[in-house]
Image 1: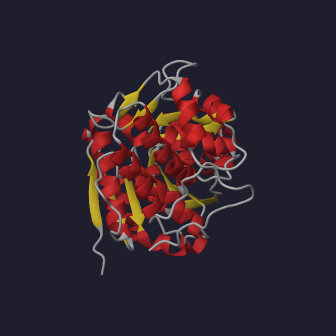
Image 2 (image 1 turned 135 degrees about the vertical axis):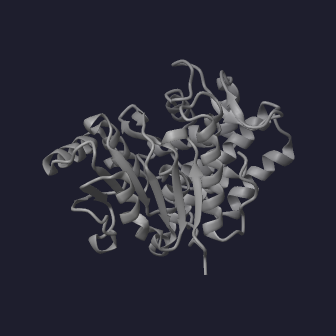
Length: 353
């Protein structure tokens, strides 16, 4: 039997626990009680019967996961639901869903009454290993992903691994893409471990990074490994390519780009591809997505220091770091050298453990 784990995100008086394991969703009433809230709004993308009772009078607001719902319009809808229920700044909001639900609910909680307590119950592998932890909340604009957001730490995160039993293969790929990139930013080799250990290792790494750099002053950039191309691929495919799938391809690209810049040797470059393959993830660029279009999208990345420069988080002799002003011609050559999937193809996603 799997014993639940607790990992603390240490941020002084804003510290909070992340509970990982089967059945931890049932901790919700005690976590809500600890906030002192008299009422709760539960925003859930799960069926109503799968939503745990928060232990106080509550309103259940149905939600839908998906990048197309991660918008300012959704945040407004949520805030109006909070207001309609009479939620005060002393109450609590609970998110129950995947990464996009976690992001939108987190931002709504940050903005409503200038901040109301939020508790996350992430129900997908992607949300458990990444989105629910760290306090970065954001929604998309047509111009780019995650451009409108706020830092708002939750009071607790409950990663119930029972929720993962019903995930479709594409959602396993979505989460494993984030786990694969952890291999290169300090989590060690997680291949072959039980999924709860992979989640715990990923969360522990992120907790340590967030504790050292909550607001992206430097070190936290490493969490965006593989994300610059990954985000561009999501947008170029109108989100038909899922976030973790894009990050997996972006991780392969990051290794090749670091090699092209002379930052790492051939063996380390090959390790990127081998790691992504070990998780059964996509490694080739989607068909029909041109190099020039991807470069234009990557210029809009939040890590870019100007509107024209290209910046990437890359491996190197000092470890992983943000590299500004990467020459466009090197980026273009590296993209052109990557394999592309045949038209109309979609490789099978991993089935999970």
